[in-house]
Image (cartoon, rainbow, N blue to C red; front, side):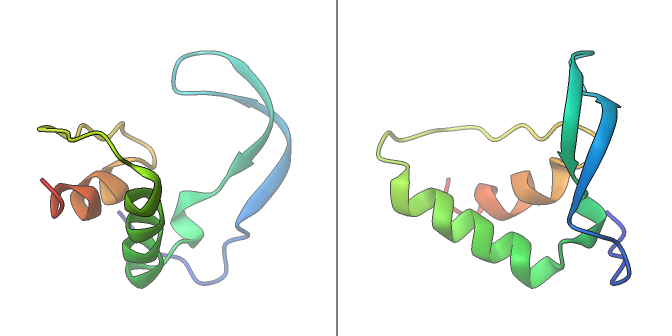
Length: 73
C-alpha cells in the first residue's frame, strides 16, 4: 500500500464503505506509515485474547494491517 505523508488521517464527508454502506467519515489508510501499521497490530494484539489462524485484509486499506497481524499467527 502506498504511504503518503501529506495525506490527512481522518476525513469527514460522504463516503461509501467497502461493504457499500454510507459513511460520514473515514480513516485515510494512505496516511499510515509502515511503522504505524506495526504499532496498530501490536495494540490489537494487546486486546485480542482468542487465537486465530488466518488474517484476511480487505482492499483499499486493510491489506497492510493484515500483513502486520499475520506475524502473530
